[in-house]
Image (cartoon, rainbow, N blue to C red):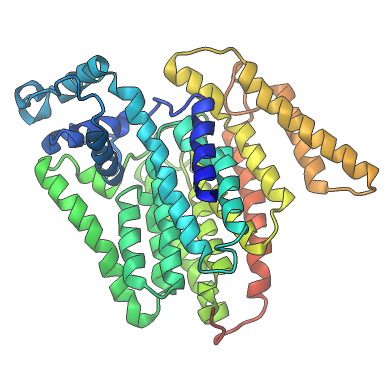
Length: 461
């Protein structure tokens, strides 16, 4: 029942908030339709900004199974053109005639099943699985708006798919199934390449006699999926398989951009530094606590730190980038057996800073006024104010709640959020500092007690 309810809540919230959005859907939807109709040579019509292959392959299979748009004939080989030169225009005409776009976007909702599967598999390696904490964690995650942003702000369901596979890989690590962990991480990489951060951590944690097995298992699905697509598309899929969608300029500059670096130095720093620091952190943790590094809370903390490092070294910052870290923070609290108020406050602030409702309006051309955009701010502020009054009545002060309330109040008054007219937000680097610093403090409070004493022999049951 918990699985069914969480899935219903996730799909219901996405639909009620106007999603899945069409924004950025072109990075995967044309590939989905081409694959669904067997036109694999045109799955990647160009070598520019297109999504990694796993999601288009899976969604293409679903579209074919459900026969979405089947009442209109898909473009022929001749209509797609030599080397797929006319594919985009031909497929676009077909999508309008068949009205396939809305139903194909809804296929993105199914990525929740992968995320849910990863969470359930991981929780069942601990004492939180198969009991009340399991459905509670699922429902809370499905209610968390930053987790929905890959379907509301911009259409990136592959990010949800990657996080689900990564958490599933951690469950395999907990079971000492390193081959399965490698296979899942390889699949995660073919969905969204930030999975390399998790792969780097697991390479360090893997026992010496399993490390090569894990690496080989991770490479296998990348080659199995990537090589045929590269050959069938005459090399146009190379970038999508190895790099993914690449960089998309955000509204404002991040900390790394503000350093003044330019060109390849800036780009390489954004891609390499998170991996190197993730490796360094994992090595230090393993040296500090030994075999206890595979304990559930330590693994999730390392996962959260890796996703946090991605945010620190990004050249651009969008709300859906916070989805992986949001999932790990909720999971970390579930493992502790207590959902912290600081975690809820952080998730609420991410929601306000990168409000997904207004972005959807711009993406679809529909206009509902500022009502929904303002409403979520007013509701959150009112709830925080009521909680502060309740604390005063009980002679208690929560510093983080008061700080949150005043920062949110100032941003509300100044229109300091990243989206929303008039567009006079606080600098992006300011929100990057606020959100990243508070997030890492939440992770540090969880893992710090484990690192205070060295243990080379402790082993998880």
